[in-house]
Structures are given as structure tokens and as C-alpha cells.
Length: 110
Length: 117
Image (cartoon, rainbow over all chains, first blue to last red):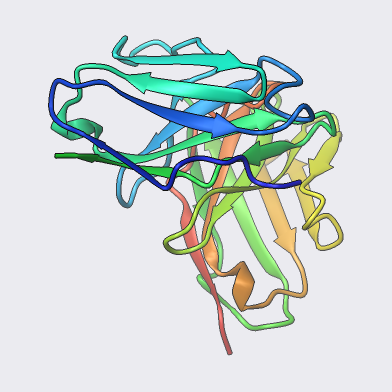
């Protein structure tokens, strides 16, 4: 199984909105509504931000939102804050009942 | 609130077996699917595999021939064994709980394992 494709880096200024894409295939992202997004701060374990494409766990800010179209899922962050600077990863269930992650995207808040 | 703590050797020799344990507190191992995920230094996340307490397991095809995940209900622990390790297996290893679908939460803090002679 191949890793999902994410941009290596994105950037934005405080208050702006950014979007991170996550492209897979009809055997993973496009097969189900089981894409999740994680935020990883330096030296920490990843934190679940979005599950099942667009659902937020309790406690996650509504500035984070998820969507999907075909084989591509997206994470949008609105009202960028300095504390959002982190690495972001998507993951998807696959038709082989396994899980594949994206390569990760480094978000820089300018 | 469920808390996960990984433990095991921080240094393993090439060709030997990497063995890690994830201790679950604040909950039962029968509550979740248990996943192992790793992250080589400076790189991205890689799913290794998972196990449900009933015995069902699923592994990453690229690691399947070398991996075993098991659950010890009496000790509320989840274990990972990865044999025939090489330097490419050097990584931070995380355990994480999920449901039947891959929604990883909670996570352990991770443990760095270095493969070197």
C-alpha cells in the first residue's frame, strides 16, 4: 500500500485560512468515509482532529473542518493562530482492512 | 480516562527482535482495537498493525512477515514483536486505541527504539 499524498508544506498568516489536501485512490480514500486527520506538535504524540471525514472529537476547535471529494480529502483551518503551527497527517481505511497514512504536511504560521 | 504507556528497550541490535509493551490504565484492553504506529526520526507516520482482544489481527503488508501483536488481558497490556530488525526500523513507536474504524485516540507518548550494534 502506498502512502497518501499530502503537500510537504503549507503556510499562512495569522487570521487567514489554509487547506491541506490528502490524495489517495479508490482503494482507500475514495472507498469509504473513513479519513482521519491528526495534529502533531514537536516531540508529542499525534492528536486526533477529525474522524470519518468531517467529524470533530469533543474539545477540538471548530476552526478545523474536514471534507472529501472522490479520492481527495481536505483539512481546512480557519482563523490561523500561532499555536496551529505543527505537522498534520491524514489517514484512511483501505479495502484490505488496513490503514494508510499521508506523508505529512508542515504548517508554518508566518 | 484511558492512559497508555509504552515500555521496552531503547536499543536493539540488528537482526534481533524488537519487543515493546503498551500498558493500559483507566480502562480495559477489551474496549478498543489496539494499534502500533511508528515514526522514523524526522519522517512520517506508518501504521504497523492492530489487534482486537478477541484475537483478530491485521498487519501492514510491508511488515506482515516480521510482526506479531498480542494482548494480555490479565495484565491489561498490548505487545509488539518485530523480528529481524535493521537500521530502517529505528523509530518512535506509538500504541494507540481505536474502534473498528481507524480513529486513533487515545495515544501513548511513544518510545524511541534505535537499531544499532
